[in-house]
Image (cartoon, rainbow, N blue to C red):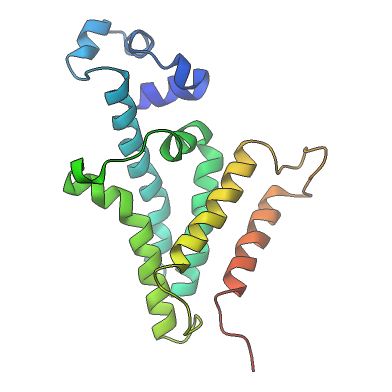
Length: 192
């Protein structure tokens, strides 16, 4: 998987070939075909490996004690994962639609890990009075994901950067932090 991710990162999906992966591994393409039916099966395996990597990157957020901190930190880690792994991140969210009926239990767990953890953080936050009581617990995690995904895509495609000629930001790290804090402000109770 690592060799395929490195090759995809360097050459894009078009450059990710069975021969190229085999050459990187120092094996024949025939040997690779003994493990994968073709490029589509490798891409599927890369996507699930990528989800595992992303979930691992996000998991420290859900170990925090405070639900608001969990939501905040998961957003920051998510955006930074995308920025650190632009090709892999794009592969995770573009292209092929997932047939949920054909997934194994482990694959379903990988797909829904962060969504379920963020939803649990929202629920705990509302129960503890640290997040607004009127939050729709089904919609709020999707709202966060849509906003964070949008920012991540804009940043990895260079549309928001310190060097963009039309929309420069002073500091990308500060912009991300400010963006996430703006999201959080929309979910916390307003002072009376």
